[in-house]
Amino acid sequence: MKRILIIKLGAIGDVIHTLPVLETLRGCFPQAYIGWAVEEAAAPILEGNPALNELILLERKKLRGPSGLAYFRRWLQTLRERRFDTALDPHNLFKSGLMAYASGASLRVGFRKLREGNFIFMNRWVKPAARHRHAVEKYLSLLEPLGIQGTQWVLRFPLVWDRLDEDRIDRFWALQEFGRGDSRRDSVAAVNPGASWPSKRWMPDRYARAADRLVKEQGTRILILWGPGERPLAESVARAMSEKSVIAPETDLKQLMALIKRCRLLITGDTGPLHISAALGVPTVALFGPSDPARNGPYGQDHAIVRSSIPSATHWQRKEIGDHWMKAIPVEPVVEAAIKQLGM
Image (tube, rainbow, N blue to C red; front, side, top):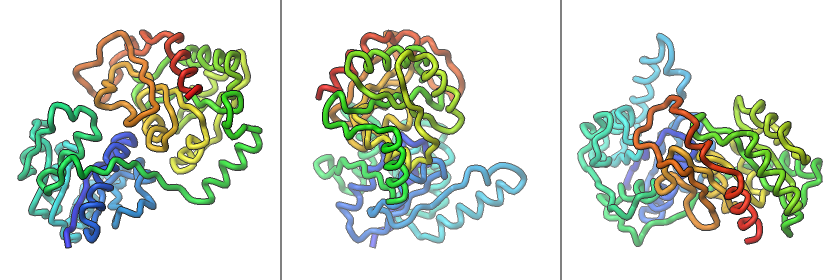
């Protein structure tokens, strides 16, 4: 029996983009034992997935401090004890390469592109075809050394939550007297102004102006989403609106999935909720500034991309690189795209 390890630690969107790798592996190797190494922030994306045998959780907070190295050594030992024979590394970083090597897998598949020394830990290297620009297809190309071709890819993005999560969102929905979305004027459009990188955030006053237009012209109800530390940002959008809006309750990731599933539309930048929405089949208007939608955009149909007029950044670092990309996105094309999506 094959024993396969997937290493994709985060972030939320990246883990969602890797889900078809898991689905394809399960379809091609129904008897295989498949584990996934992931950090706790993105773990709810995978919890309850029936295609996965084991979730191997790396608790990032335990890596800090004097005991962090000892914890990491123990964690690597758990990988080795699983006796994986194949490790797939779409994460493509030094730390993920080290994990693949430490697992003891005899086949370790990564990308040919040199990045952080990752390649030194791999023994099979893949160069994705030029046509496979999107992250989803790039990650799936790692399956080629296992004899899996593009015709066998399973492009599914299953997300799972439980009845308690659904019940909580049911109560919130009923309390706000939101409709079922059977018609355009009985629908809820969500806006999500937050993003982990400030350079990917559109301006709160522009979200407010776009939302006001949808209320006035389409009769749409507006729901403002927010994540950890983003409540003040959601409140700033609500204050800037002249029309009524509703700020979402505090949710965990599972509850956020259940909440987004009920919406008719999501307007947001390049961030986790965008890819949750796409995975759930909820139409989006995705605002892209410094990142490239050809690689990182919502995968699939029923999504509109509004791009900055400034070309995408060619180099990324995890720091503030300026908001001029997002400032170059005006309100009008966002409203036009939203109206078109609501009419679909």
